[in-house]
Image (tube, rainbow, N blue to C red; front, side):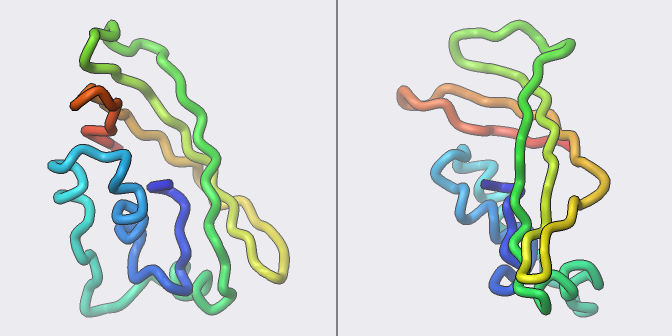
Length: 118
């Protein structure tokens, strides 16, 4: 959800964190749900996607090569995000893939994403 974007209606990629808030710890949601707009406006790529009414769809693969051992309350994983821009004119793979390191914690009986590091 964090890496699926709607440039025609989202101001920035950070809007996706708001949609994913249910799966995030409160500290992460607070850090990532900030207004990241700049005076220069969106990137050229973002503006192009918005013009095309494209949706950027994420396909996430989770791995654990070299991850610290899981505990009852903390899990560490590596995620590779492959994105595809989908519009009326077709689909196009977004290059390059994104790799992030994710920390997931158990809070109140639920597993929540606590940290995403690039």
